[in-house]
Amino acid sequence: MANVSVLGAGSWGTALAVLLNGNGHDVTLWSIMEDEVNMLNSKREHINKLPGIHISKDIFITSDIENAVKDKEVIVMAVPSKFVRSTAKLIKQYVDKDQIIVNVAKGLEDETLFTLAHVINDEMPDNHVVVLSGPSHAEEVSRNIPTTCVAGSIYHETAKRVQDIFMNSNFRVYTSCDVIGIEMGGALKNVIALAAGISDGIGFGDNTKAALMTRGITEISRLGVAMGAEEQTFSGLSGIGDLIVTCTSMHSRNRRAGILIGKGYNLQEALDEVKMVVEGVYTAKAALALSEKYNVEMPIIKQVNEVLFGDKDTQKAVEELMIRDKKIEYC
Image (cartoon, rainbow, N blue to C red; front, top):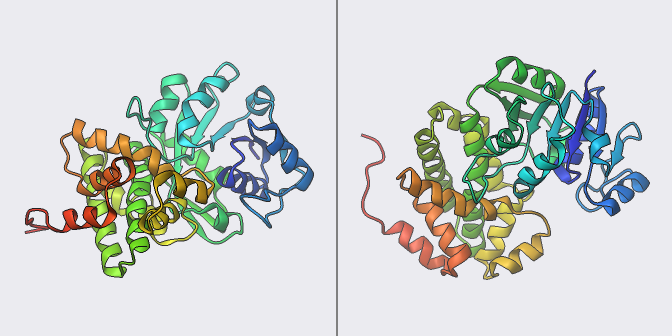
């Protein structure tokens, strides 16, 4: 049994707390919002984000950050990507170097263009960081629907320890040493999912979505490899696997936001309608900046940015993708 703290009581954090408790671990669930903590303690259910999922009374729910992280073997960072650094700053005074940090958020830091593991290590350089990623909607994991993820770390034994803690008969975990590849796949698939949703919202069909997904994983892997990732990672769970589920499922908040934009909503209207953090919006600008930094061509990422932040007509964006200069796929 492990002593585990989950920071962030959104849908994913709550689902992982339920999973870890079911695995027999001693679990603490933390939220910075006192009203959310009170609701979870009284209802033992996240009525807004995971309705119908019971939260065992064995899970200790708190807003006290020191109590949440001290003396825990594993700290799971399940906060939105834009709050990863501020949360790391908040906890580092209470964390010792032997505690494992598991990041499950997917995104990039806008200002630095760092991956989230890099952000955490920037604040807590002595801690081993593991990234847990893959096709894993909280709505399904919380209902014990078979799911497979990958735990990535430059420290193989630490990744194996996280594998042991999370894995059960419905949640299979592989290990990998390609942290950059896992993180880039997890972050950038959200931007491609926005494009897939926009395509659906416009009324395009399966052909269009298949093209966006296929060329999207090409763009993701092209940038990832330029940054030092292994190409084969993008054929795995955190690459094409996560891309498929995020581009095709209505559980995907990125796809849902894209659908609304394709139907004519502006960005803020779409975000207001979804009512959850749409990570692809926060990642899109950083992805474009990285493509420029590494001189990597990413036409889909570029068009998504112009639609989101430049008020570009969605039909015009698709037209410009289609009439680009002729290319060779493989030869």
